[in-house]
Length: 616
Image (cartoon, rainbow, N blue to C red; front, top):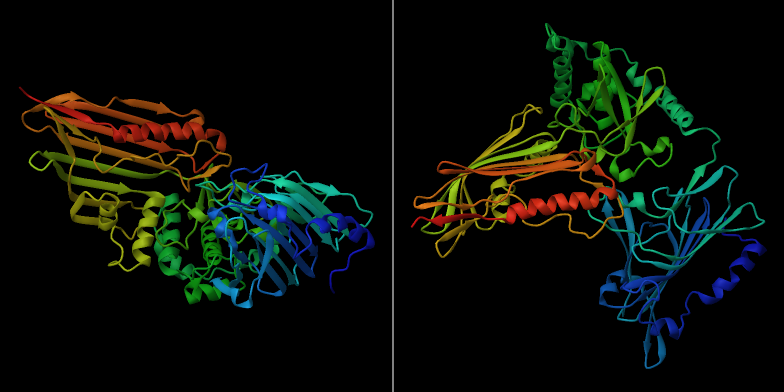
């Protein structure tokens, strides 16, 4: 079935079509030097039109104006489809008052595999220069998309979306995280929907963003439903309980008793016994690298000793339940899936385990060999998950709550005034997610190609490390211990009778990582973190302390974070301690200025100086 439009539809778009007829551009747009609304942009979308016959065909026409060299990157397009039925594209330039039109040849259109079975179509526009206009039109067959992105990394001057073949079950909703000022045109055709917009701003690109798609203006095609969200979540939980790949696998007769029983004999520690079961799965069932919510034959996967993430965690729930624990599976959407904006079963793509002891909930992922009990991978710390109870009820539970990952470094150092260097020893301990990531990297790459010693030296070119050792226990609960000796060149600056030394040498942060003036979107810092530095300086003979950096004590509102810094002289030693802690991984934008100011103080301390004066 091809796109078929009513007479009403044809009349409705005729006026706009005259202005943006494909293959024809005006001298005025080619001569345009700047947009009157979006004055600083290197390029803009002059017109974007989407014609969507649901389940059949998608047609897209886009026209882009290039203002300067920074806009040249937009001459290379990526289309997330390969089943393209029709594609035409042109570059337009104005030469001596005449419009020159260059057709994009087939050699400039090609497919590229980007991940696994996912393939895109790439288009490269020729002869693009300052002032050019590029235009593309393509049709895709057999499209049943339930999500239509509107916003783009460029602003859109004129937008038009026409949806043909509207079904009675369809409900059209905007992204609640970012609603655009769209107009829905009235029509007498119940199978037709038309949305238009003008001066649509570009999608926001900010650092520390979990998934940009969560904040992109778009229209979702949802099922109409008169039930409350709680009722829908309840139905979804019921579906999981009844599903062969999920709930039925939890009711399979215990297939693991002969392996588990010997491990827990004479064990009386409730939490300790649960950890033994958790670590047994970590060490004995290989994770195949795939997420998944379950399996149709959990016993066979157990015998194979290899399974997807969801299956391993269903095994964990079964084992804990068999031992009398209150354990349940939890359906989660990874960050790449996006936030759960609406109650939808298909958004969940992985299962983890949840253990409840008293009022405490422990989120568990036994598929990750080095992950500490009570933590889940960073990619799964995404909004809320759905705990599915045995009786079919459900609990919506946050996935982002986690203990801070702590990096604690202790340094003892002396100054060599002959070459103005500092030398000494360092001991560091990293915990929780930081320890997990460190162990994972060491296991997944060739040891010879990865060296923490080299990374530290590359980060600080004046640093030389000797006797580097790291202790990585196979016990996933244990922290990573790192020790090394060091020499740090040019650590001392002498001016007159004074010596100037940075209090934390090569540690700390000399530049604020939160350097944007403001923030519109929430920050995702992956996990709560705490950095601690304890540095002891030996005062060189013949000098005393002239001044030390001023102490600081900052506590942010709503327990967001804190910073403490102390510097003191203890006889012939200088003792410095700095602690910077952020208590949440997800931080609303309204806290950005406070967070930025905290890190401004952090960088000021890192850039401050200890002043030593020569004795007369």
